[in-house]
Length: 182
Image 1 (spheres, helix red, strand yellow):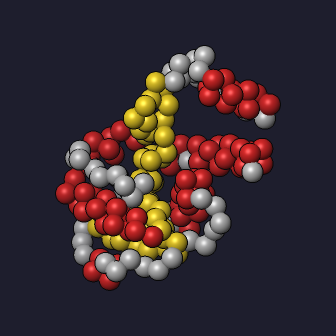
Image 2: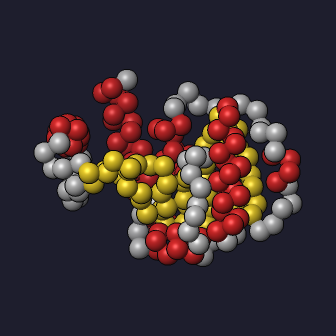
């Protein structure tokens, strides 16, 4: 299975991206890591050239969108431009380190979209935030596929090619939320 890891950073967060790449190497990852960055290349970028088994690529990002809301667009755009480079595309925030064998994470995404629960993941059915999101989705004619009592964040996500439509859905919800919230 060919996998690609994407991350986004600006400013001092390049230090986290370096730590992420080191942790991927230690976990046994082989493949491409794409570092989307706003601003100059990090000082360590040149040291990644020709270092196997991980190929590190840098992509300058020119968008006014906050990176928290740019993740699905970045993943979709990269996959559209590099369709043969990966069977599964992962996104990881640059403040994450991988502590499990990479094969565990690959297996996880083979079953569908791999998501992480948030640290404060309990969000019961009658929680005001959940009720507000359900109301928002209903007003936008977006059906809820299943009700969950947990909260999942977008700090780490794995999307196999068969589930690539998830990125379109995610982007649609972000666009609708931006229209309503500014």
